[in-house]
Length: 379
Image (cartoon, rainbow, N blue to C red; front, side):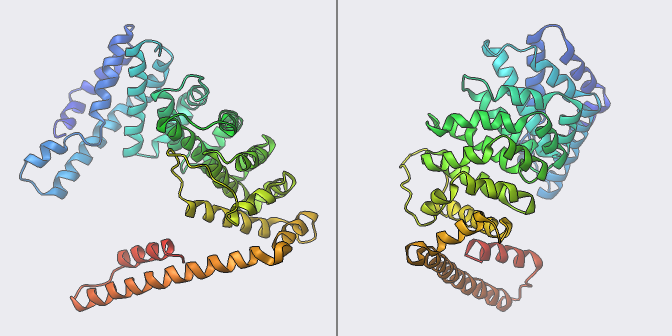
């Protein structure tokens, strides 16, 4: 890592990037692998562990060196060249397939160090278009999984990226790809990860009102309701997507469509624990997460559906039928949350007393940590 500043000053970074334009694709693939190794966040850790320097100083040295390298790469348009080379690689060939994987790895390494670069990737390159095309591939492989992961990273917390995703037809693309999981489950853990990455991408993008509109127009609500009914692995993720789609005033239309699509029956069946879930060893979503998103959907329905509408009456009727069993269920959930919270509060107070007794100061970080524990405990 200490050699990185000299690598930049000597002009080697410039020469390295220039090799990405070489007419021989094999040379390009080798250069991509080298850049991947250089931008790996773990590079230099072993060397620093062998040195007798302060850990904080070593970390600072690694970070400064990595920043110099990545800034040097970006200044020499490495992103644009890497993306343009994706079209030159034939994934039917093992070496080219590995070259694509390493290219995606470089993007991930750079984004891990500087998440703001995600905007540059979307505005200055055609990567978003490539990602959306690649996730539609019929053959499932490691590169397809990696593509879905990178898409989720790019959409994680950038409004403009999400809007560009919508303009590029991303919502319809993901809905089309995910529709295959209505009737069948992923075949292995890798494909489960692929599916979940696409659902996460949808959830992130649905934070924007414009994406909610595209989701509604693309019949996303209807598809998610169907997935809820089918009770496959995608069921839990469809509940999460609906929760995100129906949140806030911008989610009102999605709430109304949810009722029109006959989603209430399936929702409250899951709420009451009556829906039979398939026992699948590949399942990764805990029941508590389903319950959280179901409550979120119910909250959005009450917040967004007009009080004088037929949909509102249908919603209220669900709480009246079967001798108010849904109301009883809500009270059970509240009592359970209060009981868990009481235990958590007791543990936190004990820790607080012990810290004070030991002469330790209770700081904001401690309060934040305890607050998160309270949230997990039922707050």
